[in-house]
Image 1: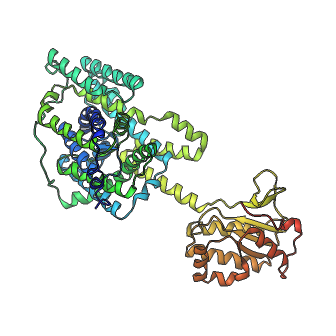
Image 2 (image 1 turned 90 degrees about the vertical axis):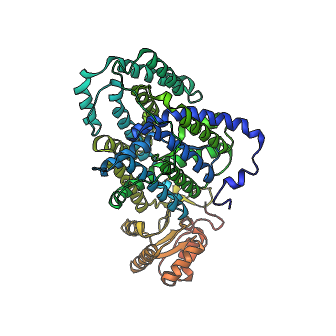
Length: 570
């Protein structure tokens, strides 16, 4: 039971001492969530109240299934804009609200199926540098898309460049009051974040202040765009009315959202869990995030994920269990029931400022510089992902980010490190010849494969051995050190068999060192072990070198070349 429903494990043992810190943390998250949820709802193309519905449903469902104690889920800028882009691509004449609800349900189903199938490992397949570039590009796109609210104008949709040109063309129509409201709100939020971090819910205070000023000075009558009517209704279970063709069209976007949302949410959960000395289960976190999206969609909300900023705030406020999120959900429900009409005079410019302030955290210029200093190729990949989102579009940018990550993974898997090994005088064992003082034997080449031996790198493995045979003077024997090989497949076994045959055809002795039992079994089933022969396998590089020295078919090595018998391997 507890395997599938973690709350059944911790709730019966819940301690009273945790109630006060959980309550404070829940109220802290509530104060952050309410204004952000309404702002992100508009970003997703949904009515403001649906952000609160999404927050309530997601918090309750996630608390039931999550293995994290502090992570909070709900609307976020990333999944909100991805939802809007996915729905816009297939909407046509269909109701965008219904499509957004359907998308949340689809995302929930994909998450749950992936979690049950134990696909939690997919979080590692989005390259961190590519994710930095992608989220940077998303942040720029979101911020530019909110500028029309801060100016009180109607700008055309499109990529970042097109939106900027449209805003420049309409800047003369900007409303002075709206500009002052939006700019001052943004400055206040950014200054408060710089000084206070996320510890104090400044956004909620700003919302309360601007609502009061809006009512006092009649801003709506003066032409300032406000949120408008919000129904004070408790959300009820709903099922969207959309056609099967529209559902099918949403599936690719749902899968993309799952990849990005899990990378963000699980990253937040891992970081907090490490700080508190416990572990989160990636598969169960997938199920929990799926449940959160189902909870959101069934109440008329949109896609949700784990929020790094709100989770950090909950952690700093002292959250000890998911009880904090259940208490937060209760506060959100009370807000929906009682307080939503109070938000009607809220200027749209304030919501735009809240969104922009939230996404400035994605403008990780320092991290981009760090990536460039570490590896130019990673920086180029991050930059392509960033520009792809900004110049081509969000969904194409997502496809580019996933594609780049996949290409990088395949390329690096197919180009494993295969160093030549040698001996450092006075030290034990064989080390890479790139180490200072390491000298390789003149008549024997020791080659180590620092990767699994499988189909993706089989060709590179063969090419590396062929390059050895082309050296002058050509080594009279080759030891293949497979200590770091933890996996061998059919393609890898066949490649090793071909390499052995190639070496022997060239009159070169060959031996395999330090292959584990699982790899040896694969070679046996593939018929490669028989071709190598029992005498061709050795427990150490040293044994392999000594055996080749004494082998009668052509290899005669000096003691210096063979190393010292009492040497081990690193």
